[in-house]
Image (cartoon, rainbow, N blue to C red; front, side, top):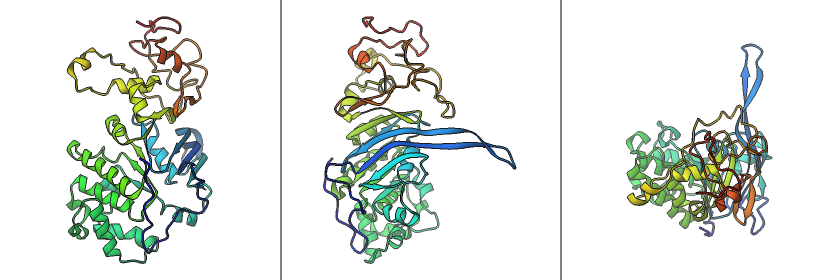
Length: 372
């Protein structure tokens, strides 16, 4: 959704940060981002014995006013990636540029000013809100921290109205609200300074199914009203499809496929994405009964010991005898707007390779054999 950026909050520092991106450049640009956590052993003399490669070289661009969905199974590094963009977790390597500004190169004070333009909505609204603060105090805190000179009480009422809560909610405490209402408070806090970018980390996964649609619709309405740009981290493929313009699929710390929402769901090309899509239930009993599900065997490999070659080859039902186990595929652009990290993406798309019953099935069809 390409909408204009909303006006700056009256009485607070407004406008984009210094070094604004040139027209046509993405609002957020990530290149080679890595987040490796050291593993230390020993009591007195600790030594590093290895690293957890939570994020292992990610490139992505997010255009102004669009929604980028980031999906993958638990442990793939998508939440760590979102936090690294905001430097809530310090990156090990790589660059993050927001609106033309190098995020990693900012001082502590520079980062504080920059965070006025980029905020986060957390997964668990109860854990992310201070139980000792009233809603008015929670929403006033960012206004005080960033020098808001206007009427704070009035701004709090405006924020509550934006997220669909009554003005009387300002005097209440987080434990007095339902899960959906608490998430609305968390969203109000995130938009208090009218940021340009919001990282939404599993914004509806902790909520009842009946409430999830309301929060998703609220996020879309706020995007239209305020010109927000979203990075939505989620594992619910239905939610991601509904809200996203572009979707990136993560596996074991790396992006394995990126495409527009419609393209990805119409024809997934990476074996991991194909397996994910095959698990989505279809509300047509006849189609559901006929279609073939791809079941992945084994658990997600440890990010401490990433498999050599293609990181997915140990579970891949399309695995081939050559290249997969010893050559790491790059995330390459097959066509404009469509990137895949698979050696055999073209053959899979053409039907020249058929999925085996499992990643360890010796009868998997090899390249050149007609599919059945």
